[in-house]
Length: 576
Image (tube, rainbow, N blue to C red):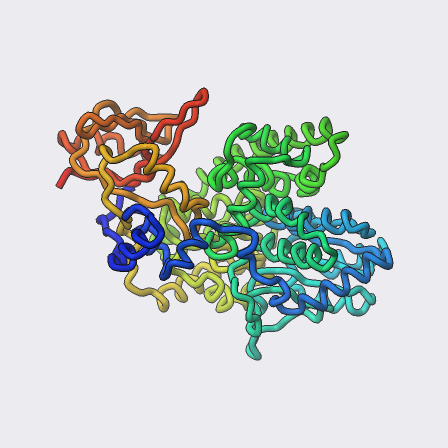
């Protein structure tokens, strides 16, 4: 809140009516399906009932059969395989998945995750050398490696077979995409890839590797259990929850909620306050993933990997201790994040040379590298602009970039490649390293690119309403229907509804210095509502007249075995 206006999303009413009749769906759910790109009855059935049988054949991925053959040979010969991961939740879950599956197959396998602060991002020549010294014959990179040209050459020189599994964009040169000289490269984004799902996360690609190994070794029954970690990594990477990503997350959430889980996952769920609860994508995003990420942000991601790989019941005490450590690191992360965000926002609001630009580029000496990515996300949320936040350490600046839906972040960074020592990522997030002396040039060039690429962006200030839904129409059946559309996330957002002529009975009351709580009433139907991060609008709400229009999403509150419907407020305006 607030928006310049409300815009009711269009949809094909005839198609919605047809779906409603043929699939026995309510008009509301049919409308929402059509708005989500459902174009026929079969697609609607798959959307509402995603299942493991809908997963694509992993052998359609580039270099896939070659990779599986090499791994099976390595398992049989007891060659040392090392899984090289990344230090965020996507990378850690990928590492744990592939490592665990190879363990179950009897492989001689270990894992390596670089340290954010001492090693930097991704697969490096130095790490390849270290792994060679441990006797590695095969390295499998997960969630990294597609831009590791020098590291791949080093692996080749040392006689190591490097299998790259990644989902990031390849390096672009004047000759086109440049791929690492690896034994094999599995990435759905490659130019010559015919794989149907281009938007897999790193964990999604790792899950496909697991799927292929399970198929080839006759262990298909193992696959659903691995969907738990794949779901966490997929939600963590904020890829669109459509197509195969939706199947992976839905399957993983069902498995995670119903159990049984490993002692490591159970300890993580417990410390996140989710034990005994039905876990959804929001729980992952705000409870589980921040704790996993806290390890790599504040120290070593090995802590998170050890927890996820704690499978034996005899390790329960160890797992509980690791989970508590993650929880404490997450608390430290929150404090550091608030500190850096406050400094960044103060600078932006005070300096028009930063705040007036189309792309925010801001940095500070010694800003904690582990939180700059989250701060960049908060700046995007606050200012609705692509943002790059930099930690300047002497002559080097380490940065994290986060994006808005309508900006070509990687295209802009490619135009600035001569200023950067290293960069990589995907449409919504990227990492950069550059000489500190180039920061001001980066700011200038990013904004020159944004200025040239700008279009009509007014729509981003319009709040899209999916459908009118009056408060008097809300009941448990409506909520259950809408829940069929879960998991919600990027590409499948929570539907936003409009109720008109609503009375504010109580409030708004400020919660935790950030949010507003109120009681809303319409024709005798009363609901509690929360406007998140809207404490600054309390005066505006108090000044509204007797009746208001409310744009909202639905929430469920579970307490002592009972469920009640609550509203999550997107915006409020005078009744019209």
